[in-house]
Length: 119
Length: 148
Image (tube, rainbow over all chains, first blue to last red):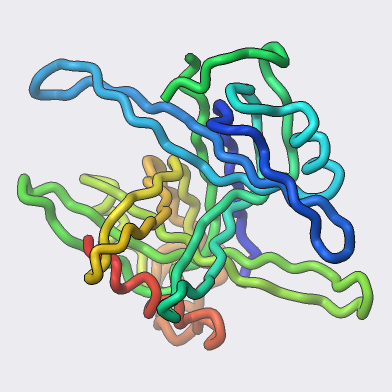
């Protein structure tokens, strides 16, 4: 069975400041929430519709530290990585799934203090 | 604000036959479950590790019909689309979220079942020729309760 390709590319805007925490071995784990917008014209009404998609992105180690240092709410950035779904259990013991993008590449875009996360 | 880029590319193997349904206006919706494998070497033990990632992929309209017609459990295919998270409520009224890839491009790989064409699939294309590893298959119980 082939290994396959699992790739995601996101260019979007941070909805809030990065959240950083550290694993037991001292590695940084940074979670960020990034918005992309999609717009289309409604076929019947002709009106422009817009939808915001929020992506959970996680970065580890040095990349995580860079992200937490330079990115903040409203920053625009490019992320590339793989899609990963984690299984966990809620308080009722029910299996839940959370999908996130584990980024291994990040590029800051725009100016550092760009404002306006705009949803 | 810029619109942004939201793109996912998956090349993987179907874990089960596509599930097809039709919306009220008659357009097709196909749901498929695709596995990609990731391998790495454990830094401490040096042993090769493997992890299977399952992706929910949804296709609409004509693309869905083509997928339903030509893909089945064990098929290999390329998918390109956008990542979408939907909010829904479970039986207890709790908010739940499901993330899937809405594919707008699909390419069959490895030839059609029964055909040749440099396929990694066995000719005849029986689904049992490509079993999904037992420990990775039962993701169904988690995803099956999503009310489509």
